[in-house]
Length: 252
Length: 218
Image (cartoon, rainbow over all chains, first blue to last red; front, side):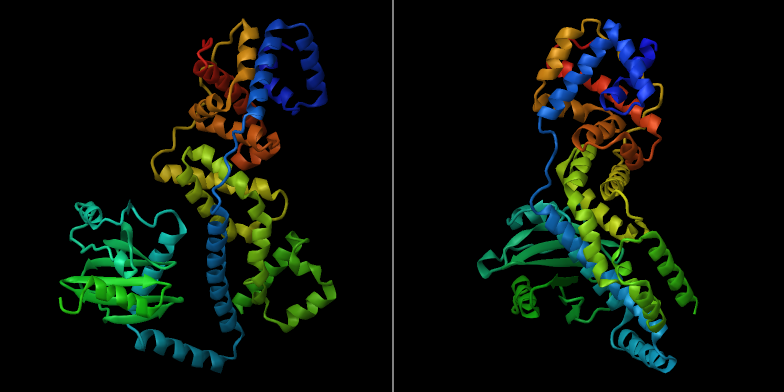
């Protein structure tokens, strides 16, 4: 064995990854090669210090909890879709037709299609904001910090207020995307609930003002001063209305 | 009808490839009766699936986070990557054939890291095979001694500075204790590449450590 080969295999040798014949060749080479022995000592030295030092990073305490809840949320969603497919394939044709009619009337008659799509997007955006560490881009309870932060990021000026005194402290703000356009998201906390308030210029959206329940989340929509607002949370509908009233006192 | 046939095939596939999973705990006869009575797709949204998934991969969260933390070199990115990787793993779980769950999970974390870094434009160019070998010092005694004394701070900094592929191989080997075969599976490279990356990575790490310790650095 020549030094070049020996040094290339030194790592595998110390890791015990060489087959027996190669290992024996290596040992006989090391027995009388000073340079390769020196290289071996260096590799050993580095391994020793790496083992002694604690180089492994431990995950933050809440990561497991967050991953578990994300996984459960996702697998619940998957199960629902698949169960629905199963139900369709298993049901007698008449029942299926009846269900189709019901489904059609609920989705297309009971609620405008665009509205459901936005509701889905709102739930998605809300859940996403809670899932990863992206609840806020500008973490501040100071309205004078949050308001200017939006400058240049969106093409309208959302009203920003802190209502900590009323039980709705401002957590911060974020730019999010809804229905294909950037929107302002104000984040409030109420007791243990996070409330996202999405604000966009009132465009052609066909949303009626009012409350809606989607996937277990409460949604509240209202318009004011040319802006469209959606508040969403797992807090109650009443609490959302309370926040809406704070954002827009009835006299204004 | 087509849905049903596909589902049957999927079920047969699952049973043939995952002999130890929960479906197969029941005796074969009972399973046959079961399958003829019930539409087969009930097996897909298995309520136990999420539990089985968690039992299989959650024990490797620490290893996954450690790898993501070293690859992204940022704790927030690492958390996001791990969460994304676990959701990817959930979607791919039906294709998981048993075997080393840790290596399987680590390969998903690793691939998610690369996608993540690519998306951020932060994925460094892959190393070619023509990276210059660093010269060896003839005077090994003091160097070996210094390397043995290197503390966590120095080692951490040096390992962070190491090119991505070397860092990845060394973290999997030295911090997670994976075999060369497992590293090859996780990184999706041949065994010879693992050997060469560890060899060159260790050499380069020695120089980086010694440079940080103010010792001989040639």
